[in-house]
Image (cartoon, rainbow, N blue to C red; front, side, top):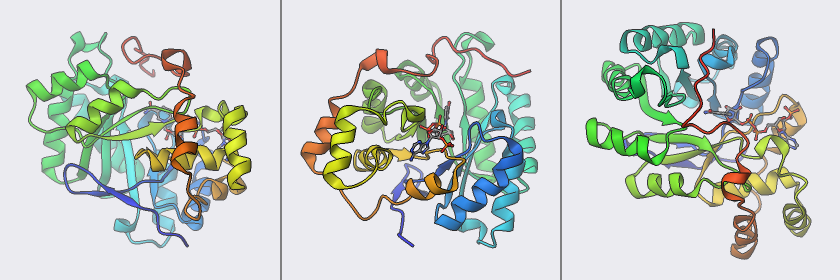
Length: 282
Ligand SMILES: NC(=O)c1ccc[n+]([C@@H]2O[C@H](COP(=O)([O-])OP(=O)(O)OC[C@H]3O[C@@H](n4cnc5c(N)ncnc54)[C@H](OP(=O)(O)O)[C@@H]3O)[C@@H](O)[C@H]2O)c1
């Protein structure tokens, strides 16, 4: 089984650079999908309270027979729980749903600058407090823009270990990624294959033919070589294995640059813009 490279975060923790995402996997299918991923060799699972499948992720991790420290588990604070007391309670809910004693990474899922009087700072201070309590190894954010990260830098003590943002060949989110690189914040790329939208791209198809791999593998390999942490989602056992088979080929610098050139800037964004996103699940 190939060894997935790890990246060292700014708090010293080692995160596997390739993981498995479970957004939009229905709870009834999640334990089997995660069990399959662990069997294939993934050792990093990305879930969230919002996905409604933390319990099934925990069930599969616990049933796997793997040591707890062999699997990196990330979850995220839901949008309705940004106030400090709510965040503490939501974190207890996450641990209890997972049935685990700690999470490796806990993220503020969205900054929600139009809600809570724009106060994600007290939410972040609550994550700092929870980390000190010892049941979260690393704390980070998701969908934070540069201005949000600058505010945390000015008003709080701990730099996020990661920022999980939309990033794929059509939307390379360069300004936010560059801020992370300059400030020691690792970039996690969500929707790394744009939920499939980049797989029919002509350039990606050409590179795939050149290296004898699938378009999905080429895009995921591009992420790894560009330093991103990725966790493609698949509910299909074969594609789950395909997305893990990334460690026996490389792309040349010129192939990487041809994919870099596919960036469409803001026009390539698929998901909502974090400055306006204000969905609070009922
Ligand atoms: N923080 C955030 O706000 C946020 C937002 C979105 C996602 N995420 C995280 O990022 C993870 C990945 O993003 P995502 O789920 O949006 O999208 P994605 O991983 O870019 O794409 C998943 C889609 O592509 C298909 N697919 C997967 N591998 C494939 C392959 N090799 N060939 C062809 N099709 C393939 C999947 O279908 P099948 O299942 O049928 O294979 C699914 O429809 C999520 O699961 C979640 O953990 C975070």
